[in-house]
Length: 411
Ligand code: SF4
Ligand code: SF4
Image (tube, rainbow, N blue to C red; front, side, top):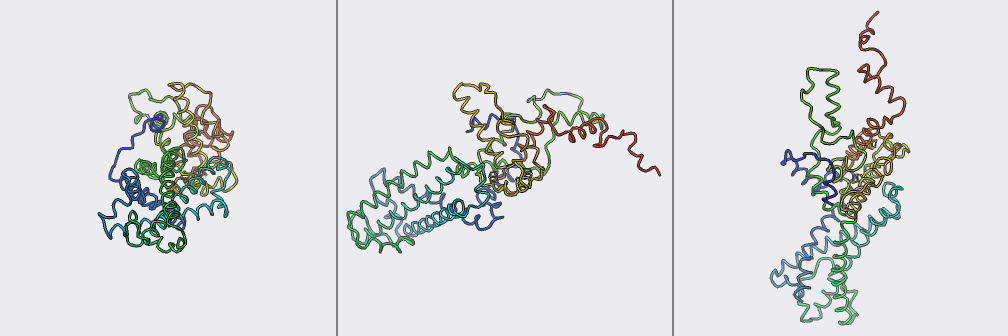
């Protein structure tokens, strides 16, 4: 993934580290932008906190397996151990409940932004697989503890007593009539299934949109610190404009541009930050939900822009893996993935950028593709071309000579 991301153009985003760390704390850890929609934000925070913190318990589960022990840390930590496990159980229950609600919102209530057509096929399966895996993993963890507590009350040596756990102590009655052999089998099975599930999940993570749990951190750190809405200049064009408007300010020396293309046609013309954005997208659809073009029935979906960018980047990565270096496949992000119709529908309103919880900028990609379309292919609607021609010749969008500019005051 790093190799793929570094295929992008250079962009220096190392300034102001203090502000960058602050952004990472607020946006990635604090999930500040999520709270524009408080209910999903709270559920997401619960799932996220549980997902991260429960990994501390995973350490014990793994060490128990490696050394053939059972609850390795319990004798060392005493009552504090029960407190910790109680907290983990509450978190596990929150993850479980949160994921069930997310599954219902996605598949039964069919929340609009989670059921748009760009999610058909693999993206929808991926989202459901993640939710189901988390539900199953948390269930195994809680069932394992319930069986363990039941065995503790029967005085088995291996299952020495810890204090009752906060969640599962309420469910031990379920196993009152179960045999000791069954309970040991259940406890061991859940241990194995839980740990195998975790290893599966770890391997699956980089292939899934769920990878945003990691990518959100660098993405928030490297988010652009310029004022939202400011448009990046193209130095080569700016020079021409200065030459026309203020010749004395035109730079004297000309340095050969590193990248000889106006805007972007393929992912390798985009900046590395655009590509990092593409790997960080969680496909939540908040950008598309806020997009006025999408709301009014246009073909544009900023989420699809990010998904297309990632798909094309993956395709190029596989091409390099297979051939050692990139072998021209005759395709490009523009046209083969993102159509002209989508690009032209964008009003550059920034609503997508504002809505994104992980500071992704679909608009920046749209702008770069559109610049290429217009500046290299002269591909613009007739009305735009007339305006461009006027700006070029008259330095104004209208077809009047600059010499006549003050004519309106006459009379
Ligand atoms: S900037 Fe373009 S893509 Fe983003 S919300 Fe506005 S119209 Fe939609
Ligand atoms: S770009 Fe941001 S808001 Fe849009 S789908 Fe991706 S993560 Fe969600």
